[in-house]
Amino acid sequence: MRVRQVPVPDLGHIDGKAWVDQQRRPYVSDGVAYVPVRDGYACEQVLPRRAPYTGRGFYLVGTIAVLQGTEPTDAETAAIQAWKNPSGILWIRSYRGAERIPDVRVMAGKSGEVCHRELGISYYLDPAQVMFSQGNRSEKIRMMQVTGEGERVADMFAGIGYFTLPVARAGGRVHAMEKNPVAFRYLEKNIAANRLEDRVTAGCGDCRDLLDGRYDRIIMGHFDAPLMLDHAISHTRPGGTIHLHAAGARPPLLPEGVPGSLCEAGTMRRIKKVAPHRWHYVLDVRVR
Image 1: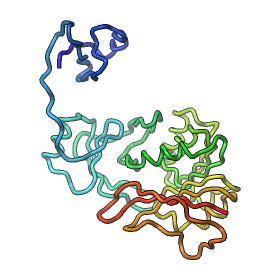
Image 2: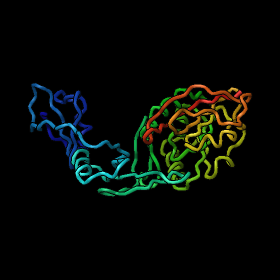
Image 3: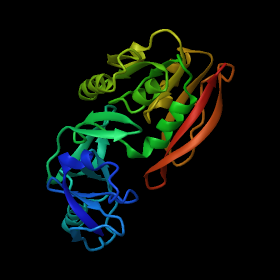
Image 4: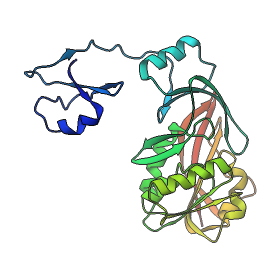
């Protein structure tokens, strides 16, 4: 790749320059951007073609690389370090308890608070302390699409704001509830960082105790949600929708004991694989 070297602070000064190849992205290293140059213009350097990454799968949360599954080898960790140069590499073995606390080992670098950008939203978190699932992106987009302007929405397991922030950005008035005090601290920070204080009311504690009045829509983004469906039904307006998350080998059904006169099962979606023969599902429950 033919490039010119530009200090990162000066990148704003080259916008619109005729020599810049707008079809290719600059490569940044140690505060210097290597900006692609269009044919017909002089370059300062020719970078060799970079070989594609073929190593183990991972995802980035801010500047931290996260792996799940089996323990990564030294070679796998080194390959990720060479490819992305993250500030840290974490192996998350599992999530513990109802508060979904990561069981984590730092494989390289260090963990700490980062800012992760997704769908135009800033999420502050430390992935070694709280959960962040990349696989829920499509469901976040859908929640933004189905939420009506001014709808009253309850997010019973808000975490750091995974669904709260997109729904509020889409026009919902969100009552966000979170039991984990560390996640709740990030929830409050993320509400403020995205300037959504006028659309979100947050409470720390057991969501069954915090539900207040009736809602047009309730998001139950926890795999234990089916055990608490009766609480959600009693706080949903007739004609409202509950988005029930669950995990299993087969799609969830309405729990036994929930009267059909109160609600009916609607659309079912398979979101992602969470373990061998185990999938994350979301069932839309319509309240009569």
